[in-house]
Length: 112
Length: 114
Image (tube, rainbow over all chains, first blue to last red):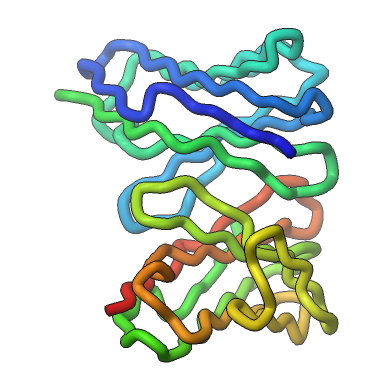
């Protein structure tokens, strides 16, 4: 079955710097890759996603890149702010199943 | 946007007891799921809640331990039966809203079993 690895497990950056979180997946049939942000005491919230027919997607300060050949995808956050501090999860799924396999999470701390 | 309400938000339970968690959505839903998030861990799918029929469980999860009901499109319950400290987790209801094709999560129910 699908396995998703996520690195790093923790990441501290200075406010204004960029943060990059990387995930790899094992099932080449996976074609949908969402990223979720989980703040303390809350459920995960979708922040951006990418499908396998696209190599890159950007939404303001957040971008995701996908390398299907290497089976890895990354989340890029630019100009980080203290409110970006949270746990970020990547996930992979096959189209239409909604059975997401989640990575182990990255705790991002943005230092003011 | 849709509101997914989970009750209770948190509870402390005694070993051997059972607890039922409710999930109510204020919009039309096509699919509902239950996830478990153990302390400091990732999210693991427990089961798909099927309307009017038995839930579909993932490997490692069984109906006797995690009975699930979904009497209508927008409401589901998850029971954690005969709890042990290892069941201490956050249990999350997640849905696919009608007209959408992404998974949306509730705030979760944090269970502590003593």
